[in-house]
Length: 198
Image (cartoon, rainbow, N blue to C red):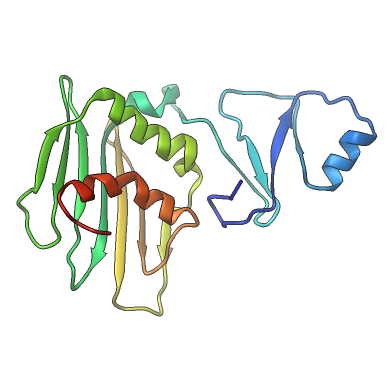
């Protein structure tokens, strides 16, 4: 399992509860095959630990807020992804959920006119959210990826709006998260529908 924070592959699943210590468990702990997470268990506990950056990741797709435990699939109202640069423009995919419909729009780099505007089945909307939160663990990512030594090149942004006016933004300028290729693959089919190649 690759860490979504640093890209490290020295990761292990976290075991919660009171373990029965024996030689096998001791070896698994020493060999980084497992990590103990403690006896207190909640609905928002991470699944994995990275030994390279010493961070946990793989939290369930839930947000612990003043409102309690909220599932992202219940509170996301829109998702926007753009990727491009000064010379190619910034093509974007915009998905927006309203009370009755979910719409997806794709815009090319240099025009406000959309190339694609269609309804999105609810199952497709849920698949996108599941990929972001259950496969890529976007909730555990850093928010900013910037290479200050490059002034031109590729800029990208993922903006997720939540109910209640809340927003999560992840962006980069010539720097990318460890799961960058996988993130692009989530939105690539929508760009492909209108002939935009990422």
